[in-house]
Amino acid sequence: MAKFRIVGINFDHQHMGDLLRRVKEHPEAEIVGVSDEKPEQMTNVIERLEISKDRVFVDYRACIEQTRPNVAVLCPSTATHGDWTEKVAEYELDILVEKPFAASLTEADRMIAAVVKTGKKLAINWPLAWYPPHRTTKRLVDEGAIGEVTNVHYYDGNRGPVRHGMDKIETPEEEIRAAKLKSWFYQPDQGGGSLLDYLGYGVTLGTWYFGGRKPVEVTTTIDRPKGLEVDEHSISVVQYDTGLSKFETRWGTFTDPWTNQPQPKCGFVVVGTAGTLSSYDYEQTVRLQTRECPEGKEIVVDKLTPPYDGPISYFLHCLKNDLPVEGPLSPEICRIGQQIVDTAFQSALQKRTLPLLG
Image 1 (cartoon, rainbow, N blue to C red):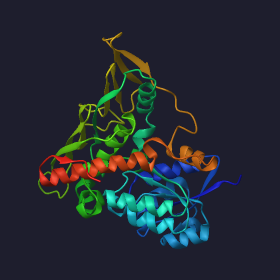
Image 2 (tube, rainbow, N blue to C red; image 1 turned 90 degrees about the vertical axis):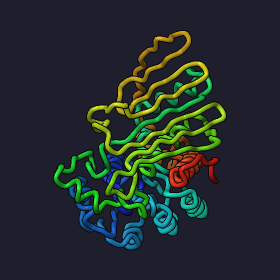
Image 3 (cartoon, rainbow, N blue to C red; image 1 turned 135 degrees about the vertical axis):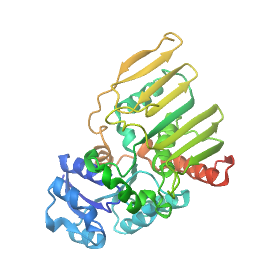
Image 4 (cartoon, rainbow, N blue to C red; image 1 turned 120 degrees about the vertical axis):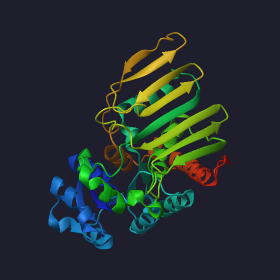
């Protein structure tokens, strides 16, 4: 078949460069266009991926109409995911949206409805879903290695979203303060804050580990440093019928996990009726503890192979073979995660425990 024609629309999130790199490297795909209303946001990606000028647009409509894509990758600010998904869905394209799902459950439902109406597919990409330790953990859970999952403990984040860009290139220290002042990540009306940035990771993959089970209630507290309008630290205690789980987000870890794991380590601990698993970002092993081996043992992580080695490879596999999008990229699992995020956000605002919303 002909190559998938893919456009990148809206570069608010720096992950667009990483996603388009995967498109460029995929043997069955090509970047036919990129678009952003603020062209300066595209400059670095255009240069690093050597995208020709005739494929660069400021108007997303011109981009789509002139390049005739069949897939769109969207990376808008969190609070505008619904708007951009609806705009692009009008062109009846399959859509991959970079995390998080949305700023609210209402917005997430708008996104689902907009794509369902066209008969196309929607996927929400969570980069953590492609880390070998986390996928290895899911395989072991599915194989019954720890029995029934009863608790999930999650801690994740980094030194902050303005400290790095495409390919994890670091921002000079003297530019950090100015970057915070102008970045949408630090604007509440744009869906900023560590809770909306990182909690979705934990509760979406947590829902995956739980096999789609929903919690009962959520209690969340946040820390918003002086001078900022959004939080840089949140802790959510989530009550399931099997006990308590904890999900913690942090901008301002001591180190970035992709260079040196901070303490606490970034990743997951999954507890079951017959054992436990620790699964930390970027590590080469997961640790399995069972009744037969209470001292625990290290298991080398699975080697990920196509099409289960990344979001572009997987999504195009689903499209090519007309398969449903499953796991943490599926709207069904992501919607449960969004319910938890919405409840956590409201719990923090109201400073009280809330039943699961939605």
